[in-house]
Amino acid sequence: MQALPFRVIRNQPGRLEDSLGKDGIVLITKGGMPFALMVGLIGESLEDALRLITQLRAQRAVASMRKEARGRGLDRLTDKQMQGEIEAARRSK
Image (tube, rainbow, N blue to C red):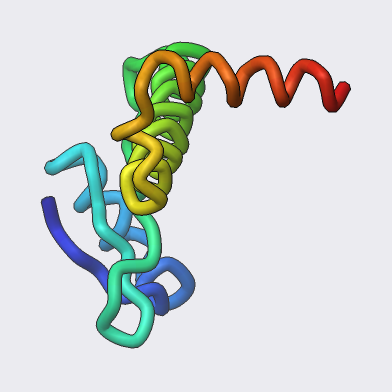
């Protein structure tokens, strides 16, 4: 995977196209820091690519929620405590 500065998109679009054609994935940097990933779709289905990206974003969201729950100690709740939380949430609706 090649990294290209953001300004290359504007100033040298052919270089970006070459990198995508060669590697399939290009890391875009802005101010020397990772900014975005570009994925080539030549020969790929746009719908399949969008489905995979959506799935990846959902997995990242779940991982983030799990990390937050561990940080709050919620991963150590007993079954009885968990059931109490569920019932309290249902009553509040």
